[in-house]
Length: 195
Image (cartoon, rainbow, N blue to C red):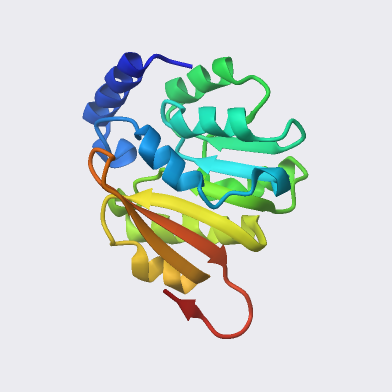
């Protein structure tokens, strides 16, 4: 895995090149990593997906915590970042497009997954792209599957409540900038539960 200084340098460069795609000038802190994964039951996890892997802060945590048998699919649109991660984590599965996650999983013969974590900057995306990604996420999650995402605002709150029956929002103030963590359970038939 890259050193922290190299991660920060890479992130800043990618942010300058494409702020709408990267969404931050610095990688996520260890505090945000811990907050993102606090509800993940690693011993019960057979499949996990990461969207928007960047320099691999969450990827490294997944790699270190998952069972050997757990399949991990890592999605990163930026080619250079993805290639760097593939070199560091050759045992993981990689892909470029969150919008077509369900199609990639179908090709990999993975019908649905237990958990999807996301660092995608949804607030920077056009509405249609946000909707397409959310559709791919909900198609790809098992019933009761977890979707965990961090954002720097509450902009996604209403959209997430349209797709998931349980939406819980936490805040990690020790991250720079402070980040909201959404923990969502897949929507089922019946009434919605809103927190």
